Image 1 (cartoon, rainbow, N blue to C red):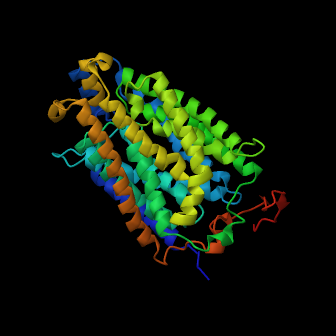
Image 2: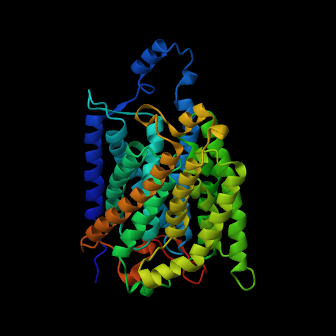
Length: 459
């Protein structure tokens, strides 16, 4: 009998790691120039700024709000589709998100915002957005593991996931100098294949014993659709949150908005055509409709044109839906990858395609379309990269996809092996996808047939 009692391990991990965060924040984290009163006043005087409205907070915070809602409401509720795992879906998403963003501020700070003279990390609103992006990769990985792992294991997944993300992000964005504002490569491709690799290492040959719980009922699909709609509405903010002010941010929001709309129609078309009587599958509508936003993460900042964005959404909606129809069953049967949420079809594959789409669009950029100044601004052809050509940029963009996949697969394999140790309190094969393993479930409860039953509270 597997012991799923986490009364000691989970509180220990939460308390110890939170205390560690307090200590590390005390040593390293400080406000940046736009959030520290003394430094902000100096900045205003130095740059002749006459109004506090020029503070970056007022430019970035609306996008931060949207991204934050996506992380905790969008991702959380999207995972509530399982008939008896809604507490775990939204609750554990909340837990690892709250831990992950703290660790992300440190990890990304050490790579991007560390002052070599003081040894301190300066954080502001853009740092908060980047931390949420970092957390998103671990939450995507959680989707592949949903219902099969303990909360302690999820904390380990997040600890390593954030660390790996910070390193691969630094290599892709800084060393290779790729452009990936919406994270097709660094977030979706990495997070998806990271979770899939862990799931492959943790393969459960007897998971069919929990088959009765691995599915949805009417009300759970409605809750999951809430997550879908929040993600769908706010994805333009996600992709444009940290792009350059001005036309870059404006264009990114437009391209993402258009691609998302296109992916909805093709998802509905393929879902209906795949069923003998033309009925729609809610799994497709909850997930594949978002594929356009994932695939536009890299290229949305470029001059891909509105009709180009429509084409990306059109194609990825089809590809993602076919993934749920054919690729997921193939992966489970032949590759031994049990992907609970289908993150391969929503994040990993569209993210990889989005990275390569960005490479093609970058390589095809011309002065006629961008202007010379526009090429410099869009691709940051400055400093040591001033002599880089668009063709070379396209090659490095493609290399960035390979780096993301390599970090995901190698890192996921190592983390998976760690999680195979019999010390984490993970559920038995016949007890997966069930909230009662880790949660007090009181009052009304919906059994497997969808009928409402009432149980007396333990209190």
